[in-house]
Structure formats: structure tokens, C-alpha cells
Image 1 (cartoon, rainbow, N blue to C red):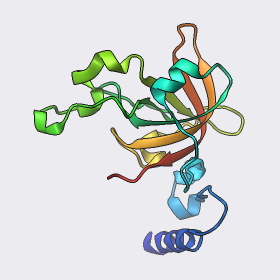
Image 2 (image 1 turned 90 degrees about the vertical axis):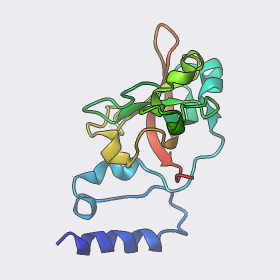
Image 3 (image 1 turned 180 degrees about the horizontal axis):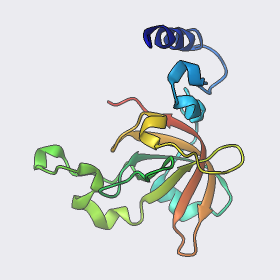
Length: 173
């Protein structure tokens, strides 16, 4: 029964491949409860900064586009909302060949992570966090590379968060 909506969705995506509109719009009937996937963009935003560079240069309330890998802890996703941490792509994660069962926690390079990590919170048009798990919403997992665009938010300790309105997921290489 789900085959027909799935085929319709795939056909729609193929037809829109060359369109100028960069948002991939899903409807609840096309993708079940995945209607919030309107936050996904089909083209990578330009001029993305590394997480480390953004932590040094971006001020609170600035528009920002960041690129990074999901990780930085054993549990980089926040339960109940579309939020996660990303680490600068220049920081090496532990290789599975080294016997590390959770390479996304960067246990081999923890000292580098503290200056190269940011929190991403996917927000709706009103700025409220999207209340759907990011793994389901964006079809991502630990070590997925994402490019996010939104507004920078700094806390009292200078930690960086991005209130993201657009997310691009790089294809796995």
C-alpha cells in the first residue's frame, strides 16, 4: 500500500532535479510523518565554514553556514527534538579498524573536539525546535556530513549553536 506514494514521491523528485527551487518539499501523505523534511535542501549551500573557523569568527545572531560531521560524543543526537552536535571535518575520528565501536565519539582525538564542535538545532519558521528525531527527519546517522544554514547562537561560555532552517546531507563517499 505504501508503494504507490513512494513511487509518486520518487517521480516528483526526479522531475524536480533541474528545478531552481532548492528545497525538497515532502507532504505527510508522501512520506508518512516525515512532513518536516522541508528543512532538507537538495543543493549544498555555498560558502560553508568549518566548525573550528566558525567558533573563532561567528558572533551571536549572525547568519552562518557550517559543514561538519555528526558526532563529538557517544550520543550526538538529542532525544525528542531535531538536534545534534557536529565536529569539524578536519578532526579525525577513530577508525573502525582500530576496534573502536563508536568512532563518532572521537575518543582518539578528544582534545581537538572541544574547539571544533557545535550544536545544530533544526527550527521551524517561528524559531521553535522541530520535535522530531533528527535521524528520522533528515535520514542521517553518526558521522554523516551535513551542511547547515541558519542563525548562530552563543551561550555565556562562548559555545556555538546553529538554529538551522536548512540542512544538506552530503552523500556518503
